[in-house]
Amino acid sequence: MKTWDAIIVGAGIIGLSLSIALRKRGLRVLVVERGEPGREASYAAAGMLADCSLETPPALQPLATASARTYPEFVHELEDESGMRVDLRSAGTILFPPPEHAHECPGLGAAHLLPAALAEMEPALAAPELPALYFKERSVDPRALVAAALKAAKHRGVDTSSGDAVIAVDLADTRVVGVSTTKTSFLAPIVVNCAGAWAGQFPPYRVPTRPVKGQMLALAAPSRDLLRHVVRSPEVYLVPRSDGRVVIGSTLEEAGYDKRTDADTIHRLHRAAMSLVPELSEARILEDWAGLRPGTPDGLPILGATATPGYYVATGHFRDGILLSPVTAHAMSQIISDGKTEYDLTPFSFTRFARQAA
Image 1 (cartoon, helix red, strand yellow):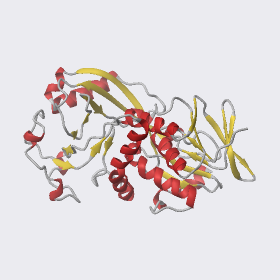
Image 2 (cartoon, rainbow, N blue to C red):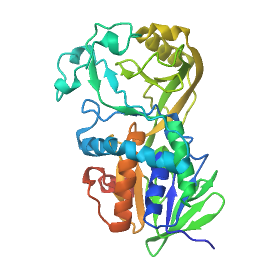
Image 3 (spheres, one colour):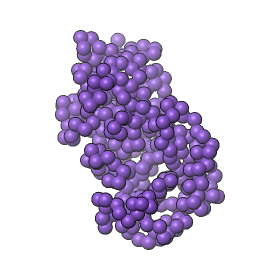
Image 4 (spheres, rainbow, N blue to C red):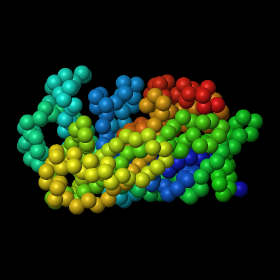
């Protein structure tokens, strides 16, 4: 029977990125996915690589900053190995803060002032007189990113199994020996749980992730250069793509595993987008969808080893899975191969939930 050095449960961008990082270290890797690879939270994301201090939990800031810094290299490697374009954009983000914070944004300075008049930066915006901030953030097309990561992983020799849900991590004498699925079993001395919102659905632990629903839509802009920057307001965000699409989102809903969209919610997001950019009233709606982000009780990811030898967890990235994929893959591959990493992962340790997860 074929064996692997490591099995990764979950073929989102976290699992695929880690599979590539482990292959670079010479491990034979199998990725097991309950559905179609890359079709869950990663596929549904907007792709904002937002690492600004206004929205990032303080404990997560070092990882977010490190990951954002390495993103161009990460994308270049995926594009080179897959032959696909990922649409990494670097124009930055225009942020309209909530009115109560418009004139008092802790931790922000001259670096976040607009580099030019708002009307000059984004002529299509309806309210060029509103207070706004600028962030040197990037954005990426998550669907293209995941497709490239999957192709790059296969190019490097990563094996995949899809349409087969893991039902248990198998143990022998308290050590990992593989996984059992609804159809078969696979053997490996290392298993990494990257199953996102489904991470808690198989033993030996109840990993405390839950689905947090986000509804979104995409429009075909009347012109490709209608928006250059990502635009974020308290009501809505707009993420332009290089092919002329504009992605609009999003909601935060505790709705279980329900991925249905609601017409009233989609219309509300659409109206909010048109109030920011009136020309979007001429744009055709291409699609709407909902994704399930993996939330945790304290809003921080779960990264590192468990008390079970050979069993690791890398999940619960909530709204930051796309952003944190490079640093997660790097840090987790170090921990799995070397037993340590250059990053302080103490705030994200599984042990903070271990008692309730046992």
